[in-house]
Every structure is written in structure tokens, then in C-alpha cells.
Image 1: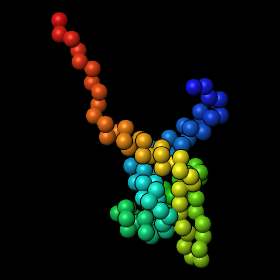
Image 2 (image 1 turned 90 degrees about the vertical axis):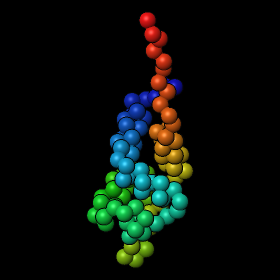
Image 3 (image 1 turned 120 degrees about the vertical axis):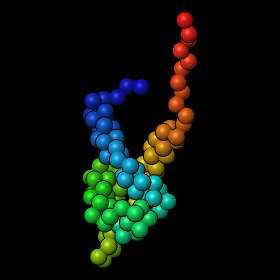
Image 4 (image 1 turned 135 degrees about the vertical axis):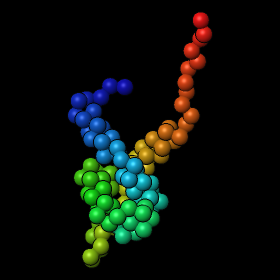
Length: 105
């Protein structure tokens, strides 16, 4: 697979945005459906300021879209690619590590 420099830099920014358990948790919750920040606070157990900060970063990287409804915003995954990336990463992390056997001398 060949990729242009700009594509690699964009992918690196994506992985940087995914590099915290809290952001991954919020993305997993949003994979189940759109939610307000207050609902994400309830579901995640994270503080309101922390959820807002993470949603801002996820929005800036294009992973989450926010739509204003009066005083609240509804947050949703930008597309299905986001949920696939997170699901694949979590599944990969859950796999038992393949440790090669070292032959004895």
C-alpha cells in the first residue's frame, strides 16, 4: 500500500486523536447513537469539562460532528469509518499476544 505524505500526516493526526482511552470510550458510546454532552457524561462517568474537551478535539479532527439544538448540541460519529477503526483497534488489543516460542539450546 502506497500513501502520499499528506495522507500519512492526516492518518497520524487521526491516531493522535484516538490515543486516549476517554476519547475511545466516547467514540464507542457515539457508535451506539447520537448523544448530548450531558448524556455522554452520564454514560461515561467522565466530568463535564473533560467530555467537552474531548468532544472538541474529536470534532476538530473530523471524527465527531456536532449539531446545535437550542442550548444543547447533539454529537454523532462523522461516518461509519470511525466506528470501524475503533472497533478494529479494540478487537486487536483484546487478542492474546502472539509470542513466538524461543527454541532452547
